[in-house]
Length: 370
Image 1: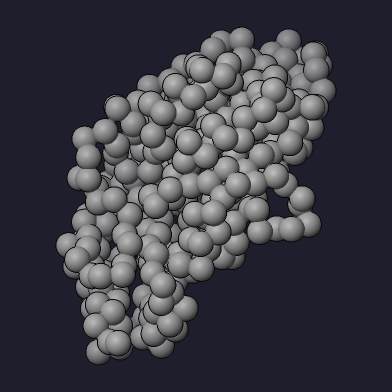
Image 2: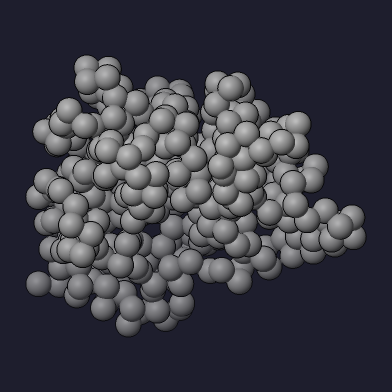
């Protein structure tokens, strides 16, 4: 039986809890609570408690969070920052926007930054390393911290895809100067537009971040530094508060879907899957995305499309080093090869068991064909 399994079901995000969302919107609008009201401060406090950190600062989007985080690390003109090539352009763009130069290293089979490749890209201008906690999985933060300590580098995490992921029971985003998150609608915790946050444990840095997101204004109302208009909209914060209450259930559902994918597809030759939910006792993966690799990628995508199953190529199928116009220094042979092999299967908490079985049936049937 043919069915439709979209890669992501945006209308269903609203329909899922329609009445509660409408009531939340009406409450906020009826109070005229548009910019930096209690909905934002309550959300920041609740997310800080969830992540067990001292400070959460809500900002306009994940890119703003990255840019402010780099500023908190005092990264600026003339500096270099090591960034994996397999990431969204915003990771490198934030480095560029603070006046520094992104230097691109490779990733490994699990899509995470390759610390050995990063080591080879270090120069006397390297000031920081930016591990990307991609697809809801954490990097080998033992190796990243060791590398940073050896070379006197600051760690600034791009944890935009990993809210709630853990490495050795520490949350993604809590390892460096600051961590960053995105609340793009398709994220594990997504609002109905753009949104983001950064997490900071240092009180002075948190105050600096709050000033930077609000034109440089401090709690006393005076401008203490040049900042930007990078605040998280109060209405989006109110929506995020609603979603945060169900966040653990949403993550549990994603992990259950990943377990089914592993059980049904894990033994197929020529198909590389992400590490399973129980692959080790070091990481807790939230499965923001389900990224697979196969040499028959384009034919598999065509077969799934014909069956009504949506797939995508993350970043439009490009690694950052493949944007020639940016003229960035890079050493990423694995990412180069991976760009011809990688794709993503549907992964979100609204998928039914029948949806997941349907996807698995068609992937397995394709792989059985010569």
